Picture 1 (spheres, rainbow, N blue to C red):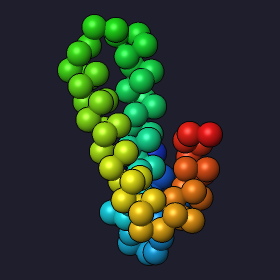
Picture 2 (picture 1 turned 90 degrees about the vertical axis):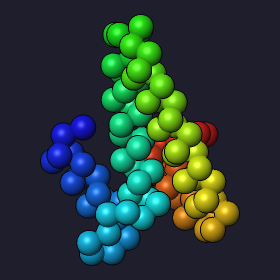
Picture 3 (picture 1 turned 120 degrees about the vertical axis):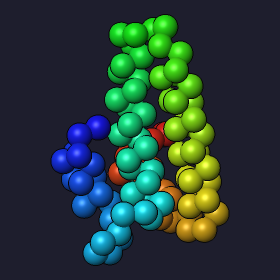
Picture 4 (picture 1 turned 30 degrees about the vertical axis):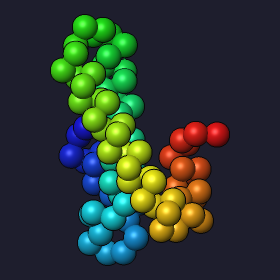
Amino acid sequence: MRLANKKEIMEEYKLSEGDTGSVDVQVALLTTKIKELTEHLKIHKKDFGARRGLLMMVGKRKKLLQYLKNKDPKKYRELIARLGLRK
Protein backbone atom coordinates (compact mmCIF):
# COMPACT_ATOMS: atom_id res chain seq x y z
CA MET A 1 0.00 0.00 0.00
CA ARG A 2 1.38 3.35 -1.02
CA LEU A 3 1.77 6.05 1.63
CA ALA A 4 -0.43 8.49 -0.34
CA ASN A 5 -3.15 5.84 -0.56
CA LYS A 6 -2.87 5.22 3.19
CA LYS A 7 -3.29 8.93 3.93
CA GLU A 8 -6.35 9.11 1.67
CA ILE A 9 -7.97 6.21 3.52
CA MET A 10 -7.20 7.79 6.88
CA GLU A 11 -8.73 11.10 5.72
CA GLU A 12 -11.87 9.35 4.51
CA TYR A 13 -12.52 7.27 7.64
CA LYS A 14 -11.20 9.48 10.46
CA LEU A 15 -13.62 10.51 13.17
CA SER A 16 -11.86 13.73 14.17
CA GLU A 17 -8.81 15.77 13.24
CA GLY A 18 -5.59 13.83 13.81
CA ASP A 19 -7.41 10.50 14.15
CA THR A 20 -5.16 7.69 12.97
CA GLY A 21 -6.02 4.80 15.28
CA SER A 22 -9.78 4.58 15.64
CA VAL A 23 -11.47 1.28 14.85
CA ASP A 24 -12.92 2.73 11.63
CA VAL A 25 -9.50 3.74 10.31
CA GLN A 26 -7.87 0.45 11.34
CA VAL A 27 -10.58 -1.65 9.67
CA ALA A 28 -10.43 0.45 6.48
CA LEU A 29 -6.63 0.08 6.26
CA LEU A 30 -6.79 -3.65 6.94
CA THR A 31 -9.49 -4.09 4.30
CA THR A 32 -7.31 -2.35 1.71
CA LYS A 33 -4.29 -4.49 2.61
CA ILE A 34 -6.42 -7.65 2.49
CA LYS A 35 -7.69 -6.80 -1.00
CA GLU A 36 -4.15 -6.14 -2.26
CA LEU A 37 -2.79 -9.34 -0.74
CA THR A 38 -5.67 -11.35 -2.18
CA GLU A 39 -4.76 -10.10 -5.66
CA HIS A 40 -1.10 -10.99 -5.02
CA LEU A 41 -2.03 -14.52 -3.96
CA LYS A 42 -4.09 -15.07 -7.12
CA ILE A 43 -0.83 -14.75 -9.07
CA HIS A 44 1.59 -16.28 -6.54
CA LYS A 45 -0.34 -19.30 -5.31
CA LYS A 46 2.57 -20.84 -3.37
CA ASP A 47 3.47 -17.75 -1.34
CA PHE A 48 2.61 -19.26 2.02
CA GLY A 49 4.21 -16.47 4.05
CA ALA A 50 1.88 -13.97 2.42
CA ARG A 51 -1.04 -16.34 2.96
CA ARG A 52 -0.25 -16.50 6.68
CA GLY A 53 -0.06 -12.71 6.84
CA LEU A 54 -3.40 -12.49 5.07
CA LEU A 55 -5.04 -14.85 7.55
CA MET A 56 -3.63 -12.85 10.47
CA MET A 57 -4.99 -9.60 9.00
CA VAL A 58 -8.41 -11.15 8.44
CA GLY A 59 -8.45 -12.32 12.06
CA LYS A 60 -7.46 -8.91 13.35
CA ARG A 61 -10.13 -7.20 11.24
CA LYS A 62 -12.71 -9.69 12.53
CA LYS A 63 -11.80 -8.90 16.15
CA LEU A 64 -11.98 -5.13 15.53
CA LEU A 65 -15.37 -5.46 13.83
CA GLN A 66 -16.67 -7.61 16.69
CA TYR A 67 -15.52 -4.96 19.19
CA LEU A 68 -17.26 -2.24 17.17
CA LYS A 69 -20.43 -4.34 16.84
CA ASN A 70 -20.61 -4.75 20.63
CA LYS A 71 -19.78 -1.12 21.36
CA ASP A 72 -21.84 0.68 18.68
CA PRO A 73 -24.00 -1.51 16.40
CA LYS A 74 -25.21 1.43 14.28
CA LYS A 75 -21.67 2.55 13.53
CA TYR A 76 -20.72 -1.07 12.78
CA ARG A 77 -23.49 -1.39 10.17
CA GLU A 78 -22.50 1.93 8.57
CA LEU A 79 -18.84 0.89 8.36
CA ILE A 80 -19.43 -2.50 6.76
CA ALA A 81 -21.77 -0.85 4.26
CA ARG A 82 -19.15 1.78 3.36
CA LEU A 83 -16.44 -0.84 2.95
CA GLY A 84 -18.68 -3.25 1.05
CA LEU A 85 -18.17 -6.09 3.51
CA ARG A 86 -20.65 -8.94 3.96
CA LYS A 87 -24.17 -8.66 2.58
